[in-house]
Each structure stands twice: as C-alpha cells, then as structure tokens.
Image (cartoon, rainbow, N blue to C red; front, side, top):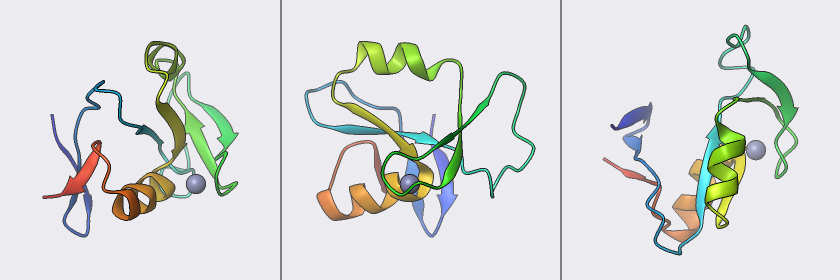
Length: 89
Ligand SMILES: [Zn+2]
C-alpha cells in the first residue's frame, strides 16, 4: 500500500528494521470531522491538532522506534533524515 500525500511524496508501510519511523497522525485541519473512534490530540513535535486513531497504540507498542506525530512533521523529519517510512515517489 502506498499513500500519496502530494508534492511527489508517498508514504509506505513502516519496515521494522531498527531505524526510526514516524507514525503519521492526520491533521485536524486536513480532516476536520475525523472518523468514528478518532481522538483529537496535539502533535508532540509541533503541537498541531491531529487525530489519534485506535489502532496506533498497538503499533507504537510493537515498534519501539516509532514516533507518532502529525503528517507535516513526519514529512519534514524524513526529508531531513532520509528515513524509511516516507520517500518521494
Ligand atoms: Zn507536528
């Protein structure tokens, strides 16, 4: 599965290979209504309001190297650090 988020950037499934990954939380300003079960939280990096999805708690528990943050921060981090979860495509 590959999710295109614009600007030629696509998000691919996280590979648990020891490198840090970023779990994207959708921004409230992009999806104002959210979905059933989503909880409004603040991005721990930039403080933007974003949505915590029910499945992400389990993902974070299984992947110690994963940090939950908003989509914008995830894209910025990976652009700077050449991470594994997001790359231009
Ligand atoms: Zn953020």
